[in-house]
Length: 430
Image (cartoon, rainbow, N blue to C red; front, top):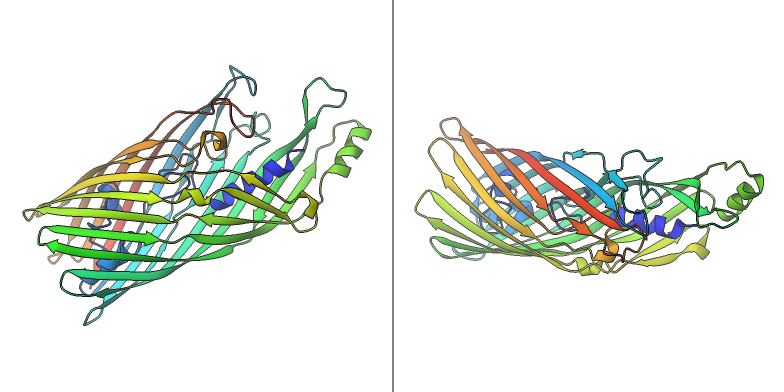
């Protein structure tokens, strides 16, 4: 039986969003349209309430109360071409185009004196996978469908330490919900090297919470230069749910009896998920009154994802740990904006390093190095432009990823992916 590896895929899914997502691993960096118009280079340059996510220390620079809300329409397409020994040359598979809309909402308020506070909602991680023709998909013993949603609520505060320096800090409450399905196989009785499909597996989780913290710093050493840094701490999530296993009759009563005896019964199952730390350092340089140029270096501590513990409530003899050995990764984000009387236009480019080692690349998360280009537009309304609409378009170019004969699931081949994002945010200040 492949039940152990099945639940390793479950645990991976509960850690993570879209396959071939727009960030390394399973992260989602698309958390505000104005900053994403500059390819996400917002650690020092963010100028709206999405600072709750990008750098809470910047909030002391916002007068009054500000709201920023919207979301991003993410689209991904992935295909797979097999090689020997399994599933073999000539085998091609396609994932159903995945379309999700993670929403964001932020509110900040600057008090008289040195303090500011902020509230935020977003989805920083997640997963959306569904392969076409699940009854024939050659990788269905690994996954046929996976869906995870994360709901992150933030409360942050910032304090001005002087005219040029501010610090920020706060906490995060992250809720997750998971659904994952695959199929179970045994060796065909009598030998011959074939596989017989004998059951379907489904894990549906409850909504499970995890807790973390974040901090930021904003420094303006010169009138035209801003420096920012931010850190988001690791989040531990104990994901609990129900494992349901439905047996398929084979037509052979002896085989069916043996399968029924070997399959564990429906029961609660759980795993421990460690969402990685994220640290960023950014610069923003103003040229005249119209231009801002920004650059960020972002480090994500994916190496915390060493293995996946699997726990069965009743069948404790099946408990195990599955090795993943992810690597830390870097992103480099560069962007610019030009402010005109009627509108602001933005552009940017980013480079994103893959976190998954070759051995861990699978139909659940065919992750690879990627680059992305963005264009953005902002427009203010009313005589005082209290109301602002920002939008952006992102195209992510994902490098083809080969398993190179070392895949832990024995599913060898090459993945090709493309991802795009269209985002809109609405801002209001009073």
